[in-house]
Image 1 (cartoon, one colour):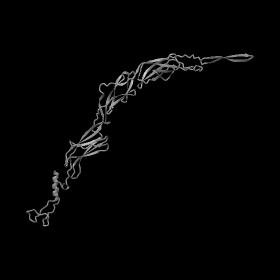
Image 2 (image 1 turned 45 degrees about the horizontal axis):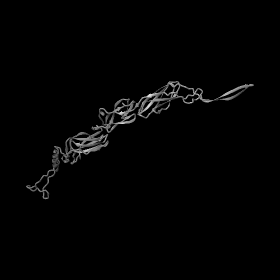
Image 3 (image 1 turned 30 degrees about the vertical axis):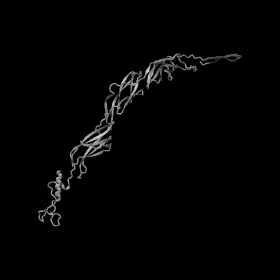
Image 4 (image 1 turned 90 degrees about the vertical axis):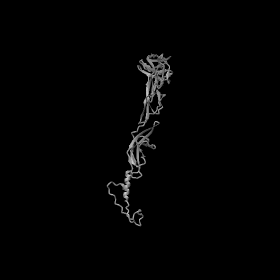
Length: 398
């Protein structure tokens, strides 16, 4: 009841007329007789909130009227929550620390209730004694454990498609000093470790990766060494083709010499290419790029004939800092570049061309008869075609 004043009202009736007079009776103070029940059930639990301690209070209203509640713990005050009759609400405070001593949280309860005729209370109504709840000591202390056994699990593996070497790194996680679970993130993969526990996770690492980052509850914690030697290798790629063409340098010409043309084409990557004839010296390296084949012509000796042999083609590529090679031996057939003069290409049994007429000796002849022959003696000069035929037979025998 709010404060106010009172008055006496005096009335009388004289000769049928009512007379009234109001006389002040004085003032009075406010009175508040509202005394509700404050029966509640409270508790406090610590949780790990991104690596820091959060206290979460729970309050259950067991009365028949609603109330509001505010939790205070370790010098922090939570936002007030509305608690309906028969329901449970929670309030939380973030302490910003990773360790916390044991303590007590208090719950400040209050109501602000108007009476049946609309009068507002003089002030918020609170219980005589605020309810409390105890919490124990808290620690969040994750760390990377001490390695035991091999640092890597299994052998190095190489993927030719991506030209990448990988190994599996063993990362020890230690949460034995924590009273709360911690979520570690290793290599982008989260792993929750319970309070007081240890574990080992295995994550892949690629060549050139010096370390694996370890996070605890989203915060950088440590880095585990992950460097290793490359296990890259180079086999003859399926997208590289090599072909040989035995040929003569100048087909049909007397100066033609045997050679073999080597063509290398790549449909995937760049390679340095060089070739050799068996145990001979290597040619200079040239680069074959995708879609741009290269051809090398190798001379086969100095004569007109070359025996069958093989060409060794070598591909070179630098992968993960290592110079790797792949070779392929390719056979070629014998090559001959002999050219027979057209006049000498007579087969056996073919009639010779007509003989040249006999040359007559005369005084005007520029050719004198051999000694011992009489003047006027006729000398037969062999036809030119016979001479070419003899030469052709000699060349064919060669």
